[in-house]
Amino acid sequence: KNKTLVPVWDELFVLVKEKAAKNVIVDIFDYDRFGDNDFLGRACIPIADITPDEVESWFPLLDKNGSRAFDGGITGEVQLAVWRRARGSVVPEELDVHVIEAERSVAIVSG
Image (cartoon, rainbow, N blue to C red; front, side, top):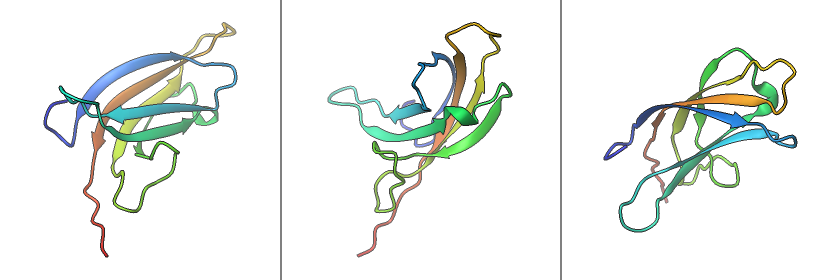
């Protein structure tokens, strides 16, 4: 979304779960018309925590290593709703991920 630190996407994605997958990872980037898009953060949701019931929650934005940055780096949160798609015994399993919105905060580094 253009020129905002609080984007609202309201986009729904259906993901096919790979057998060995342990997490759903949602990477957030800004868009740059010229040059590379900037990585803003990552949300990581353990697949074991995803149920058939839609659960909406705020997830902290993490760095590319999956760590929370406290040094003036990545800050903010992304709001996601996730649930397992009811498929009975059909394989592969599908997961729904609803990317709703994000909030970024400005980190102040003292020193």
